[in-house]
Image (tube, rainbow, N blue to C red):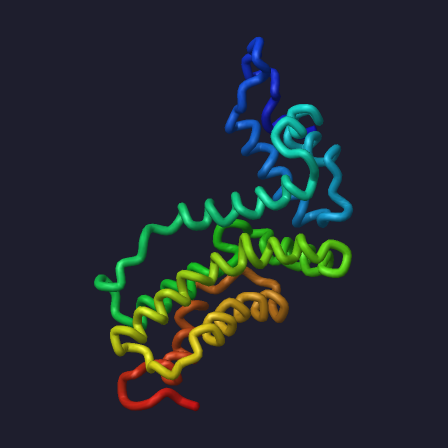
Length: 214
């Protein structure tokens, strides 16, 4: 047991033990780590409480089962990534700079270095726990990609991106490029990765200099 957080640090009361955000954070972080290293099916509540340094009753007072805990762990990761980025102001960036920044922000590993393994484990559960894989899409992937879609749509409105560009396909290509790079090379994301992705796509989507490439 790593003893990340002992529940003994939380004061008791006649109305029951109050919610301690630090305990919840420890449980969530242990869950996220174990999801990546062991996978959903192999990870147990016992593993989580041992790593977080809490008891089973402490966990069950907050989450009724492993599934609900994992869903909140996904939501937690997305919130952390959003908090790590300041709001993007398109008026302060050129259109291409805005797309580069938005592509940089969809990197799954930005906040969690184990994100690729985590995604692989969730995909491996698609047959056994299809709703869990759906949660990964709905709570993690779709919101993570939304900002890029919004940037491209706004740039279309401003005339900087060609109106015929398939925004959804561009987002999928950009998001998928991080997985392709990981599966091909298994390395940390190069510092210029987002710029290189956009450099490849930009001639096909920019409205400058004529119609988009078919």
